[in-house]
Image (cartoon, rainbow, N blue to C red; front, top):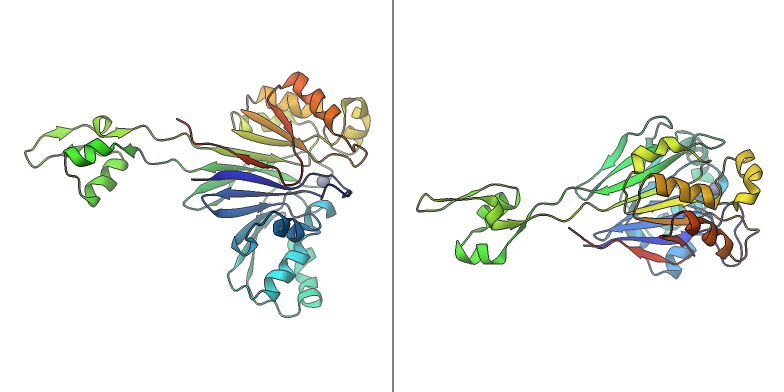
Length: 307
Ligand SMILES: [Zn+2]
């Protein structure tokens, strides 16, 4: 079962010849969740061979251009390709005010329903769930209302042992109950405990997207222990004043959050266009939190199943 993240854009405000603006794609068991939608998202989706017709859920952190300018192009292509499935967009309610009035101008008649789900910028709450995962909002600290998103796999059923199926000649109904935690009562009236029949399930994998934000320790309890944390690192720490003035973070600050939240791996990105080479940002972060990677467009990060 896949749990993998593709970086579609790693630049901040300005795209560069190598980097598009913010967008990530999370694939959980072949269900695709798009996170932010910077300019040119549909080009990146094509370039990285992602079947973007399968995207039904889009999560937008805030309504700054570098996070939403790809939406109109994407919506337009969905329409031209004959999409009929509803598209769910999770964001601050201002996004609907930007999209709705302009849709007719840019798309003509929109052939598919767009369902807006307003997300409150204060307090972390459950904003979405399906049978694969839950998504919680993460209030961030930026110039305008902004939230990050915490994606977490749903708890998995226990894994049944192959030997147990053969030994007790279990039928389908019994297997489902046992995976759910039940003990087995045999025809002879013996009770076999669930522990004997199953192995513990895998850990629930998780991914937290935190961009854009100033250094903000309030997010630490929400993202504590996640497998993957993406935290913006727009500047080097010697540009701290600039970072503060613009409600962005430095690489050192991103790493400090990762360290305090005891995450497994930190990904940094949302680089200022001034950094052609991001090695200094990576070095600065690694100094505080060694398991850091500096993302580039097209990078894929898989989180493997583990106990
Ligand atoms: Zn941004």
